[in-house]
Length: 208
Image 1 (spheres, rainbow, N blue to C red):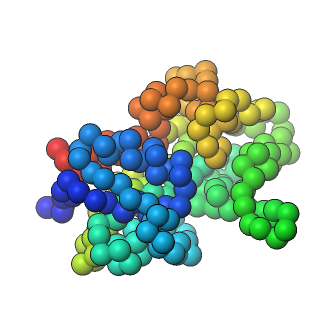
Image 2: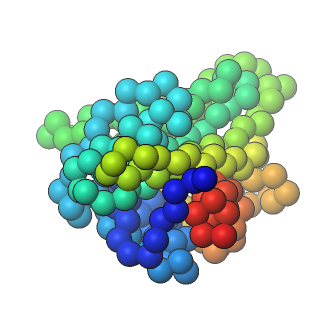
């Protein structure tokens, strides 16, 4: 039987404010207080896995061991059919660049442009089918863990549209919609996103 979370504090193994806000909103109805790894001063482990599951477990276990609390990690990314599943686990890395004064950062417009450039190079008839994937991993300090996976299929558009969301949201149109994730009301996005799909599975396993 899968171990269950109780109400109380849960470390969200991220330094990304957008992810913390989204995950916190989804867990709030279950009496879970979300603390970010960043607010606790926990280091970010190197994501050396070759799959979303491996990276999610790596991050969750590192946060649980460092904090002594149960921890939840999210590893998500965009998989483009015509690019053989890329960028996949390297979704964030495609946005990495050096900013002025040598400070590292991520340029998501650059990353979206890279994907679009590769698609255009394949010709006008190339498939623009893609999917966002999300893996949620829960780890406890004693080493036990659980994994939940979700998917949101869709297609890519260009140029980017919308100002809400983050990452590749401005170029992703989910199946059955004509707006990008960055144009949808946040509540609507939460209802149909890959993270929402994974959370539905987590809730069924943890709180049902």
